[in-house]
Amino acid sequence: MKKILFTCFLMLCIGSTFGSSRPLNNDDRLLKKTVNNKPLTVVNAFIDASTHMDAKLLNLVLSDNAKVCVCLGKKIGKHSKQQLVSFYKKTGKTDLNCESDYEIVSSSNTLTVVRVDLKFPLFVQRNFITIERGDEGLWEITQVNRFNENI
Image (cartoon, rainbow, N blue to C red; front, side, top):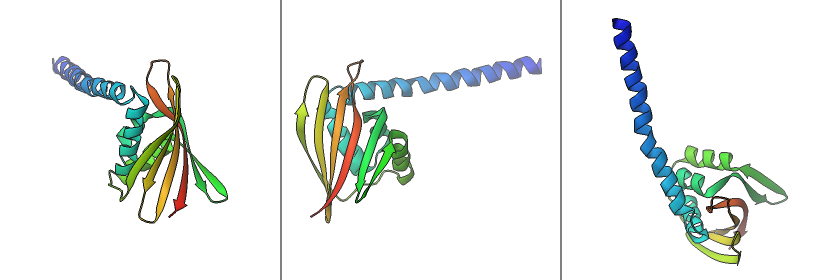
C-alpha cells in the first residue's frame, strides 16, 4: 500500500512539474514570435540586450549558429552564440553607460545588414549585424562583426 501511495505521489509531482513548465515555454515562443517578426524589432532587442547585458533577450535574437567576431587589433576573437549568452548570464543584468544608434546598411526580403553603434564615454563599439529571415518567417541575427573605435 505504501508503494502504491508513493508511486501515485511521485507521478503527481512529475505531472505537476511538466504542467507548470509548459506556460513558460509557450510564453518564450510567443515572445520569440513577437521579437523576431521584423528586422527592426530584432535590432531594438539586440540593442536592449547589449546595453543591459540581458542574456535571455540575446538568446532570442541570435540564431543557434550565430558567430560573433571581435576585432582585437592584429587578432580576431571568434565567439559562438553559446559563449556570448553564457558570458551575459555570468555577468548578470547590468546597465552599461552608453548611448545607442543604428543605421540600416542594406535590406531585402530575406537579409538585412545593420550598423549598431554603442557610444561609450571613451570609445564607440560598432556592431555590423547580419539578420536573416528563416524558413518559419522569423528573423534572427546570424553574424555580428564588432569593432571598437576611439573617440
